[in-house]
Length: 80
Image 1 (cartoon, helix red, strand yellow):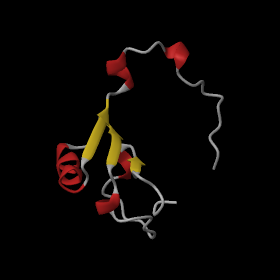
Image 2 (cartoon, one colour):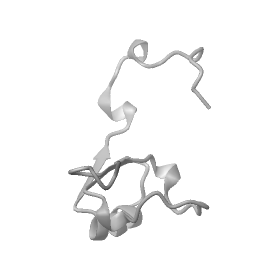
Image 3 (cartoon, helix red, strand yellow):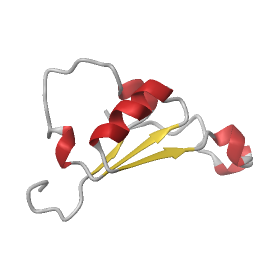
Image 4 (tube, helix red, strand yellow):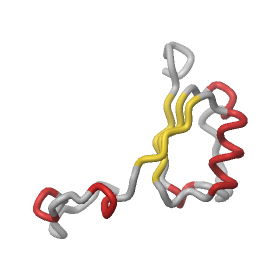
């Protein structure tokens, strides 16, 4: 699927950085855009920006001033 894509995106929150994994999906130099959250450190953002053309940092929910009624309720169970 990645080989056929016009653009490759990574959506990863700050907890996914600086973690060793046993598998490699694709090298970072083929990624066009990284979207992460405001918890990513300045150093991680700098490193990713040197490899990936577009790095987007999504603001935290607190900064968006979103009503809690719009957020998922605690009874929602995520798929494994």
